[in-house]
Amino acid sequence: MAEVSNRRVLGIETEYGISALGEPSGEELHPMQLSNHVVKAYGSVTGREAGWDYESETPLRDIRGYEVSREQAHPDQLTDSDLGMANVVLTNGARLYVDHAHPEYSGPEVTSARDVVAFDKAGDLIMAIAGAEASRRLGRPIRLYKNNTDGKGVSYGTHENYLLDRRTPFDRIIRQFSPFLVSRQVFTGAGRVGIGQNSETAGFQLGQRADFFEAEVGLETTLNRPIINTRDEPHADAARYRRLHVITGDANLSEISTYLKVGTAALALHVIEAGRLEDDLRLRHPVAAMKQISHDRHCSTTLELADGRQLTAIDIQEAYLLACSKWVAEQEDGRDGTTAAMITEWNDILERWQQTLDTLRADPMQLADQLDWVAKLKLLQSYRDRDGLGWDSAKLSLIDLQYADVDPHRSLYSALIARGKMRRLVDDDRVGAARLEPPTDTRAYFRGRMMDKFGSSVVAASWDSVILDVPGWPALQRIPLLDPLRGSQAQVKELLDSSNTVAELFTALGH
Image (cartoon, rainbow, N blue to C red):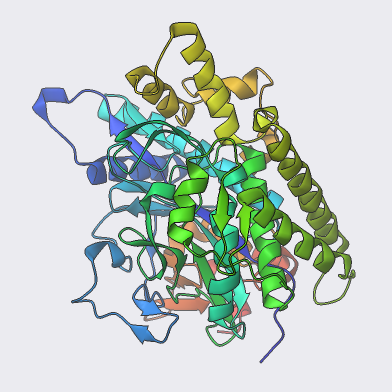
């Protein structure tokens, strides 16, 4: 088996909340129909609507060695069919489609945390454009929100994906990564008004998703949600790779929250794969701990570890930080695919991670210009102080929602950005470019360039294939993309640039 590089392939996918204001002529549209309008609206703007190739998808295959039958599966688990809903493969290599009752943006594969941020923010921009166009076409306002719950018992996901070496024992991932995911809420939480799945208790908490987790390990993503998801669907060569599908994260608007969320997780996984996490940080009650951490905005609650120790979430994160710092210090430019740029980013993540934990320990409110939950809490507290509002006030729930509005003219997060109250990592030019252009160092480059140059010939695509209608060929032709690190700009740009037709390209590829 070939060695797996230190270049970690990763990405984020987000389901956006959706609603419509007003119902013309008594017509009521289901959220799935609304979502379909939104995706089709963006497809009309970009002209790149295409099908999705589901052949290699295995949503019911479990890493633990079995596959759930379709008869036993919950309908929400059957993600390998589109139910006739719209699907758009974007020129930036991403996918925009309807996932049950939500429009979902699945960002392209990248190899750096900063690129995750750029393409994640590009998704917000895409949704803003799509929402505006859908509103114009339907003749009534469509609202899209980058959040994770409607506050009434419904939760929808923001999922991260990390490519792992198939040889890493999965029980090690469960033991060593679960405490990391539980405790990272102190800097990844998006903030939420209401406690409990149905917001039955008044209050504020760090995370939007914490109250919806019910198991430590499992295959599901929409029911009996687990901290560690066991779906075995690598979207790559299954002999070499495993894709870790992480469903615990919140939908972050803060660029620094997103950067830390994926950057620290990627480093922690490097350490776990290398067998270098020496401290046993397993929690005695991980599901309960998710809620304990989220419900404590002082970040001081102690959690019981399996070995009897009592540590805070910050203590646990510092243990991971120490292990990651040791691992990074040993890496060298040119070894195991490591580059100087990767080491620079890793060190930047470590520095920000340490500064964030130090500040959380001293005074979390000092991070109001960096972390979503703190920024939101500060904003909400200003209204509470001014108007004498209790946490059960409907006005606070509306403010919570408006923070997450993707329309920059309505978004309270955007207002904070405009006033210089939130720090950024990428500028508008970078986000605008990421909306249209693919990353250069993964197969997303080939996918995106194909949609841009030969989109009319692309019948369908997936993460690991592109299906073409090639003139002169009697059947559709599939180009496999099983290695996420192949199909990069360095490998295929010249070929794509020199091909004037899809037939020329197909021939040049050796078919």
